[in-house]
Length: 149
Image (cartoon, rainbow, N blue to C red; front, side):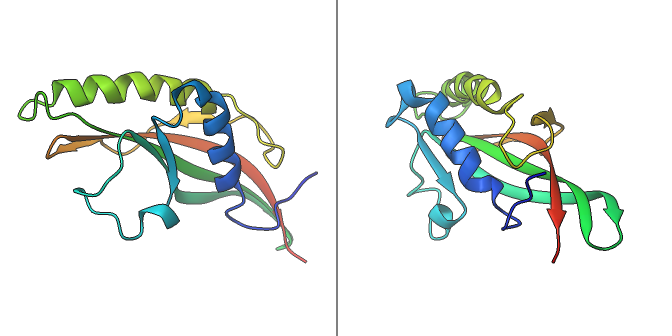
């Protein structure tokens, strides 16, 4: 049984997996985390990009207050900008849709060493379109064992 030392230990593993599986698209696509996005506005947003963002967790099982089986939800938000069809956003959506399928292939079924089973695509939040930017979030659930000392 491998338990992470850090509650958010999944983040660098997801970034690494995306960079490895989308290497043929890099450096054209940036893989960013919450830290990278602190001071970013829509005008300065690097695109295309994939934002790896922690969403939440659910306690699936608790054993004696020392061992927990939890399910974390992580978002991989695909962000594209395309000004060709600014009003309708068709081109930005098409770009996002193509990248999203690559993200799905990279993370769907991926089992990091600290996970108890492969990651699964789950229902996610709604996407959005603003000022030529398309935001397409994919939500993934991963199960982890957390052990307290």
